[in-house]
Image 1 (tube, rainbow over the protein chains, first blue to last red):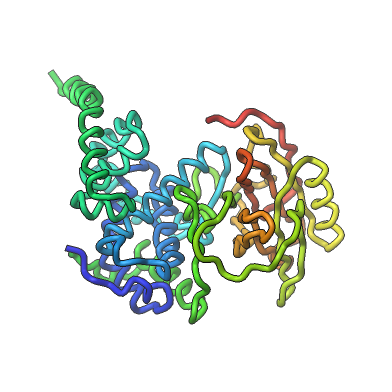
Image 2 (cartoon, rainbow over the protein chains, first blue to last red):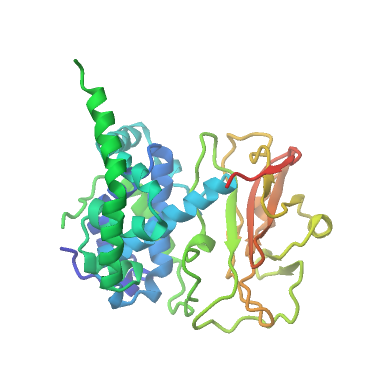
Length: 190
Length: 209
């Protein structure tokens, strides 16, 4: 259950931000590790998610759901922007690059987290076959554990629309998931 | 909910300290935030790095017609290809809406006239540079202009890419690199950064979809 933080306050009060950060840093790092496999990029994206949260805090509306759902919405936008940036071929960095804050121990810990999320990344890759709308709902519900209602609020769609998209996403994923299971089976030593 | 405990000397603590400073620098009464078109909401606020070499460029994209409440923007009556204005403290505020190589060349000349060694490249829609990393030393620390307010043109309703350049951050031998242009008909995107010259030439290639 996500603690009720005063989201607008985190954009102007460092202490409020710190409480929010400590409550959500692990969730954000898992969110990122499920989607990228490079520790330096993961550090940059983690930094950017919190910067974007500060930037967006003043416009937070309670109907966006619990703070964690709102933060996942922010993180999804950051990751989507990163995909567009990569497609554009631009080399880029945040206003402060998370990678510049890393030491060898940090990289090893982030690598461990990335390894632990390998299966999730396979699932995430399989989701590429879905439409953006379907994938968004499935990500938040299946990977991040939000309720359909919270996912709907995070995505600013109705709960009915979220349920319909989730149903279609699951149906469209059946072939992809079969492929993933097949690959896993191949890797089992004889 | 597990609270992340203080653990001195970790990435998480260093990031927290940086973020606390960032929050402390925010204005006490923030200006009303613009509502942005879906899918582009956070792009203009700065993006994260990628690639194996040192990150060097910061992309700045501005989308089309803005929606929802807006702060009172300066009233542009035309969509200038670019503007350069001096800010308090010596920074230069640049707005960009390049329409062709001539605009890029003119911007480059005017920047040089103000003492900023710059390389400006116009990228037609669908094009990019074959090697986007154009600085002479890709291991040099990254330096960036600051993203601006992305003000909305009063006559067009389009959000205008904008950033702030502090000439004091451009060291001897450094250059400001700006490259970008239209993305479709109502969007523009730019990458920019400050790094050591000489700047390699941009060979235009098709951008991968």
